[in-house]
Length: 626
Image (cartoon, rainbow, N blue to C red; front, side, top):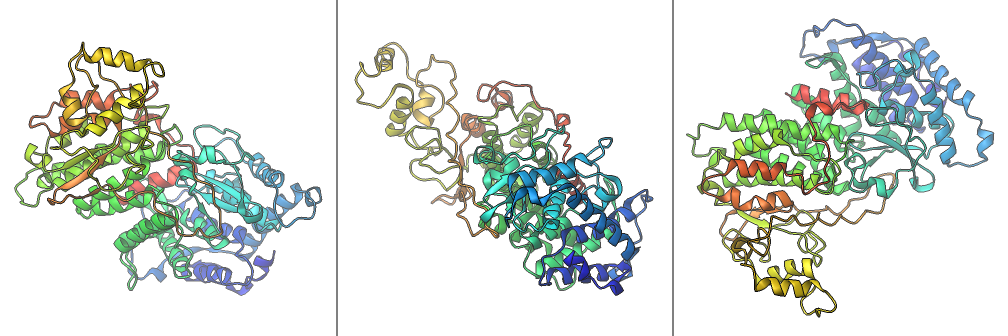
């Protein structure tokens, strides 16, 4: 209990924000590791005392933050809970069974997980707020997903293992351990039930193409970053629309402490939370919230290969609230550029709801606001905004490709059609659309450019003829390379015969759309090749990583905006989108077609009910940012 012995008893009772910030500062600057159990108990005590059975009327705001008085946190209460946690862990784990080693083993991590898991009460809903701290665990045996993972790391710290750390995606938590943090283990659940995956490794096969595991690019925490995680997990909400201002201010001050000490630079989600708090209540002398939103984006791009979605949706929400609509469109398109690298699954309910809200509520609202079109700078007259919109939907369509469950249904198609129809044909025609198809030669994404990069001469621009080499490559994808003898590939003979019997498809020759012959039915090319699975890397602090892509939008030589479409559905919509008169029925059919994904039950927004502790906090953040 070195961490607790360092605490000066005279600091108690803790009854204002500055006293708690001072204790955290002492822990973070100590020669010892910060004591996770101690700090979680303290912030949990404050959060629960201010939100438990409290009237929904928020305390009157004041400009002087120090005037907020907190319920006193008494020394004897903290000491009793702290000792109880140590007794639970040490009483259940016999270290002699694991030999003399400074590194944890999978069996030991699983044992600590068992201790926490088996002591939880089963008669509560795990998506309720305020269940993420050890205070909740020690006083009510209740924890959400994040709380379980944090408790396991804190329990391993109690046992003296300094190699066990939190791994955080945008909606899940697990642990890394062992020399160099090379081992991984599930220690909690995710989804609707209590699926017991605890102890199983999070392998590259699971992490690849899965947003839940951010394509093998999670935030691997150091001890101070785990403190940042528990602070970021603080939930001031009293209801979906009301919060305890004292808790929000405590969280804000603690995040600034961690920011000043350099512990948020590798933590995009925490930077996003701080940005949100600053937007509501700016701190004099601090960077503005828009700079913090951008810092979160740069952190995700620098250290996590641009595999995190929420930095862009946080930023887009900020632009939306401040009526910077063009910038919001760009941020939402950038978020979609990230999600295109994943395959949608039923574990993705939170990010699904995020994109559904953007597509069906926020974008239509923007269009309604600017719909008069009287201003010369209206979004509806700006081809770049139209290009951002196409990129946004292209990413979502590509997210659907190769997935077992469809994403797009009629509820998505109607708002898209309504939005597209508000852009005049002359504006839509000013966007150069490049279609990157799947071919064996380029690995499925146009010269290996997975979802990014500005166009090159090999793209299919609006007014360019479909080059002969592209026709040859497309035919080769169906019948084999040119020059292969008929004996080696029987399909060539059939194709040769067909050329004398069928009329070539004009759209295929001019724009690359449809099958080669006019009499053929619409065929859908196979899903794009998967991105190579990354080799997992778990350093204490991630080094800068190459960004997966450059944003696929830029001006052409004529100054026209340019967008690259990768998804099968959006490539098939190219001619419809550029038509002078929109065929809204055909656009809807193309978007909702199920031929390009495995057939499954259509997804409704109401199907997505997260039982994960992350879900309630993300939903709260969305409501708060409105």
